[in-house]
Amino acid sequence: MSTTIFCNKQELQTELTPMIEDCFHVSSLIAVDLLLHLQDHIDRLRDDVNFVIEYPYVDRVYRDSYYGYFSTKMTVYPRDCIRLSLFEGILDPDEFREKLDREVLQKRYLGFIVLRPTVPNIVGRSLISPFALKSHDFLCISSTCPATAAAVKVIAEGFPHSSQDGETISCAETSIWSIMEYFSSKYFNYKPVLPSIIIETLRDSSNQRQLPSGGLNIYDMAFALKKFGFGTKIYAIAQFGEVVFKRLLSCYLESGIPILAALDNRGTGGNIGHAVLIVGRNYVTATQIDNLPVTIEENLAISNELRYRNIQLFDNDDVNKEYVIIDDNFPPYQLAHLSSPAHYYNDIEWGKCKITSFVSPLYPKVYLDAFEAKLHIKLLFLKVGFLIPNGTELFIRVFLASSRSYKDYLAKEAALQNDIRDFILDTPMPKFIWVGEYSNKSLMKQEKANGLIILGATEPDLANYKALVFAGYGDRCYYPDADTKELVEILLPLNEFSIYSSNLKHY
Image (cartoon, rainbow, N blue to C red; front, side, top):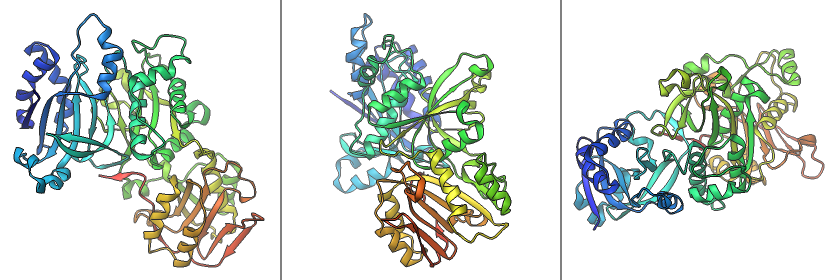
């Protein structure tokens, strides 16, 4: 028989303790101790969050690890889990049996947490809405997942999270699992992967055993994601330098792409190596925009043009943001600056950790990467023929978007000049595009822009305007002729328009 219990935050420990004893086959003292591992997750939740506790629960991720590993051990491991479903406000069990209340329940549903019998790391597969947190003043990418609560179908939304179990999945495997959960919920050509699939995928490329997991390096993680259908790109701070490295990470995040980051303290003589996901950022304030310094451009053609024309260029990727981090050692949605990405550990050695490289899981036909796209967008804007007065202040924001989502945004953006908007909507585009929005500090604080460049992300050859789709600023716009690839000029004002904001969800 299954057990279903309704309770609030204050009652949760009392209700869970005997259930953990029974489900995980542990003593009451151990059960109370295990709840301490859950307490940090619960403390971050709003006080009006209530719970539906269900046991036994069959979790597909834990069952995969159970049959592939835990069931083969001499110690007997239970195969069932406990699931906590989160709701806003007081729960009445009758609501789950009355048809008229189903839509209300969905609006109040805030996700779930699975507790698995992998003592002491019991927090398993989870999907929690940022709205469930006391503090959710950030933007992030999110996925959806069908679930049930007290037998009622609901849809969870948030970013997938799990702690490592210490034996079958380390930080690397949980990061790969999270990425695949995210993409499989958004694109039909990606599928979720279980721990055994990750292990099997890496079997032939590894020179050592996969179980128990000893962790993966950045190249192993990139290889696994490549095998799962991504055109992965690895970026290292040693290759690009700190300034460009941080800009690239920011640019991909603004594109709605989860960043798999490797951090360590080996540069200071330590031995920590860890993998986390970066999935969002804090809101950029007017003060941060005001305090943003003029960009330092390492490309000589760009820096010389800016200096010659006395143009001040500010780069959105230089804003000193706090990033939203998914770390399997902590509850989801930690906030940290890139200068101290592991500050929430409150540990001296972890405090020395830096992000040394990251993997960007790109759609395989995105052949133009962020580094080349940003350079080309800056050069095009300065050289394509726009009448940019000397002394102009420019603010640039570059991101990747699907042409489908971008055209949907354009169709609703009434501020654009109608003829230009219709022209862009009627222009054929590849599945993904790079977009450069030009503005100034004053306009950006209003989330507006007055310049636009669109590149096809499937064209790495940047000669002769092959990648250019559209460029507009001031009183003129340009596009390449379909046959000659020569620029065609249109004398129409672009007007000010709202910036694109669909890559990251507001909370």
